[in-house]
Amino acid sequence: MANAPTYDMKGKTCFMSGATSGINEQIARRFAEAGAKVFVVSRSIEKVEATVAMLKEAGAEDAAGQSVDARSYPDVEAAVQACAEKFGKIDMCLAGQAGNFPAGAAQMSANAFKSVVDIDLLGTFNVFRAAVHEANRPGASFIAITAPQATQPWLFQSHVCAAKAGVNMLVKCLAMEWGVSGVRVNAISPGPIDGTEGMDRLAPNEEMREKYRQALALKEFGNRDDIADAALWLTSQGADYVTGTILEVEGGTTLGDATLSMKL
Ligand code: HXC
Ligand code: NAP
Image 1 (spheres, rainbow, N blue to C red):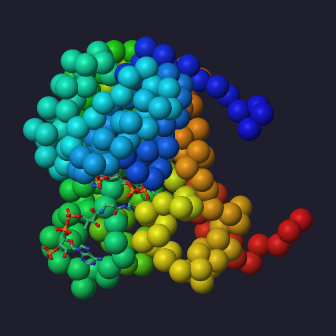
Image 2: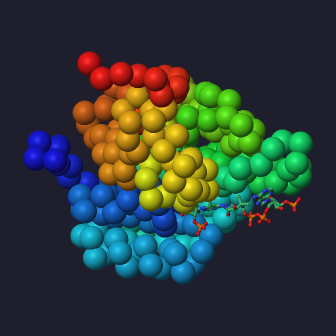
């Protein structure tokens, strides 16, 4: 990490949904360490409060949060207003919330399918739609968290594949609409990130983990800082000509099955 770039987010306001655990919590922590004002939302008030305390400890200029279900537009809008009143105009908006469980399409209920689509896709629309009116100025950065399932069909993931494919296209459409105002909209697509809820749900035992690891070009799982680094860069001036991009930080997941690869 000796040559890792450092970022200064002092005076910047970040609104982050689903940032109270896992990958997104680490993104919030890294923005706090860079001195940002960070407002986090998710359903569990206990998780929100714990994250706000952590962010203050990590060095945020300020931190706050609210219990919000991203599926409810009025609740998201109220949280965005609370954020803007407390911290001022929004510079960075993250839509990171997601729902996932492995289930065959023939077995899952219509409500199970809808739950994931609503959390991932409608939730991302709600967060971005509500935030853009408080972030309507050049330099604002919107980031959605998508997944390899957006472009690859996966067994027992029809709900997630459909939802995340929608997220990718939403990001591109919004980038096209909002670029005229200097607002950039991108997505990060993480690969398997070790020690997260998503990995625990999709690869719950060592045998599955090892098969998964061997199929990757880089033969190792990612970590939460891999994704936080990408989010910091996408928000920085270094990425000021980047919009509508799906930034894959995924160890080669979508290149194909690399199980049979051999060392040089
Ligand atoms: C089949 C299931 C199910 C399961 C829930 N349902 N779990 N169906 N198999 N394992 C069904 C329920 O029976 C119900 O349908 C419907 O889904 C809604 O369930 P609720 O529990 O009422 O919904 P809710 O409280 O809104 O919870 C949403 C959730 C839950 C998605 C079901 O798991 C959740 O809160 N997840 C958030 C955390 C998470 O998933 N993190 C991982 C993200 S990782 P009926 O018909 O009975 O009403 C990721 C990518 C990982 O996205 C990629 C790794 C490489
Ligand atoms: P996680 O720890 O389960 O985080 C999910 C977050 O979203 C939590 O803060 C959760 O808090 C919140 N959330 C869930 N439903 C919500 C809702 N309806 N409204 C508002 N907030 C909600 O998951 P993770 O594994 O770190 O994954 C984070 C993101 O990365 C997701 O978008 C996921 O699809 C993506 N991803 C993960 C991996 C991986 O390897 N883990 C790989 C590819 C992509 P509450 O419970 O309090 O609501």
